Length: 110
Image (tube, rainbow, N blue to C red; front, side, top):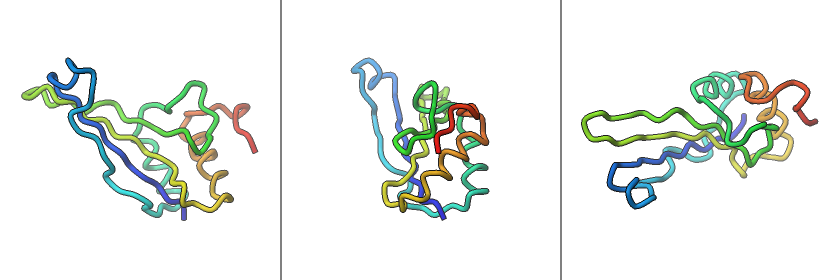
């Protein structure tokens, strides 16, 4: 099992004017996923935190913002590799990021 954290940020028109989030936090922490569940979950995200991504454990995946057109609020979600994972799980994070296309095969490090 691979432990994941999911964070969120909410930006309102008012908070954007101040250059800040209206709200941010964790939706869940240290939730166990199988490799298959991890790949399926990562497919729901649009991009990696850096480009080019290498699949490092400090990289994360971010969703496109969900826009509430009535209020102007934009909510984004990010999926993070938990620091509570054993070191051996890092390779599965890299392989999952490769499987969904965030990193290219030649960029995968062993």
